[in-house]
Length: 274
Length: 279
Image 1 (tube, rainbow over the protein chains, first blue to last red):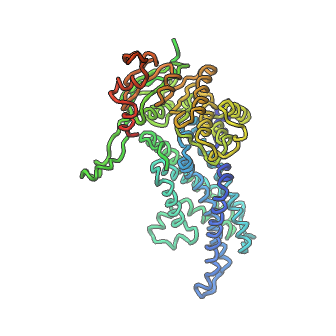
Image 2 (cartoon, rainbow over the protein chains, first blue to last red):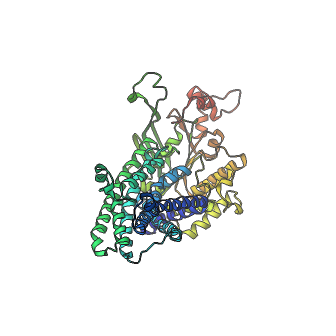
Image 3 (cartoon, chains in turn brown, red):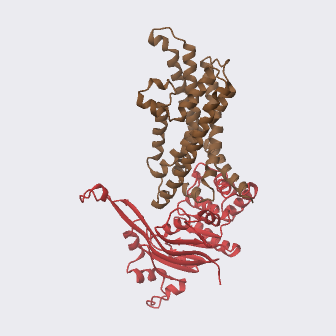
């Protein structure tokens, strides 16, 4: 059997396992979907109510679309981030981590399988939320550059795969608190990346941090595509920048993961569940 | 000369853990950690096709030794080689040759046995059709009923779950099988099923078995040679008969492995277990 076939079977193991987890924990999925949907609706209703809040006449349709794009893109990116960062946390919770780490599967293969699932799951989930939200709000995408948006989203996914790998080491380092720490990482990205407001609204020091968050460029690029209809050619420097940042973060993530895995094996931290 | 399946040379493992009494003893924060030595300069060699037992009380270092061979822990000193592959330098080659069954049947609890075993099969690169046929055959051989194959694991008894764990260990046809107290907590019938299967696998598939246990009878019945381990040290290593020959018989009765343990450590097995703290 060739190494490639064996590794692909290994990668598929993680896709199939995650699909089975969704089937077996479907109740959680429903709750999580309702939570995400109501979040997106609540945020978008803030845009609809802006005129009433401020007492001034504003372009409500633009604000609603602005917030909705932010909410949906964040839904997608956070699903990618959580699906990858939880690749260790799930195994810890179920107690199977030692068996997975003992199997002859390389960590990049582990990652490929988890990423394939994460992207597929992220797309399906975001489209489901979009379909429901479209009942509540009129989303005018007639002038949008949808091809550019797809490129931008795929390029942004690469960075979030890398960030997910970096966050996945937390449950290895901190068996009891690691999974909760990934929530803090996601919350910080949400705060600084201009998901619901322009980053110029933030204090100067936070704007400097926002400049190194890949989410900032994904969100800005997606708004440029969907709201302004920016051409794909004009957006290509941002797409290549995002791919470059993504590849760099994935590289760093794999090195850090390898180091932390060795540390966990040295300290005996794979054994404990929490 | 028989091929060497496992070589363990001068292996040492130390765990660092928080010393919960340090604050009371007035130690500063940096000093509030203590070292627990789990294994002290362990040397042993297991030949291909051998069933080698590691017998010791809870906390004596048996599971640590298994985890080191499984590549789940890194040693603090010494070397471990599986069929010539260094466990620390070439873990990938080692992983292809081994599998492990541990005392805790760790599974995705809401998955069925088939789903759990298929996950394991794919991780080891097995083809789906071949894996399905093999897992069904092993589970049937272990006495599991076919109607349970697709039920969630959480609805199965401890004994049934452990049998699925044994099936997972054998599914990948490892040439070195690591059995870490595989029958602990099983009812006598399930225990016999698992023990019979270990014997059968060894005879039919030329597998080498490293078995840790604190069940003296199990070690006596299954193992070609036994290392008695206490406080991270091997205190004796021989065939079951050789070990029993180390102590004189009392009142005409043949000595048991328990008698050997008492003679070598000065303590009974239960007493040793009460003293030990798992690392």
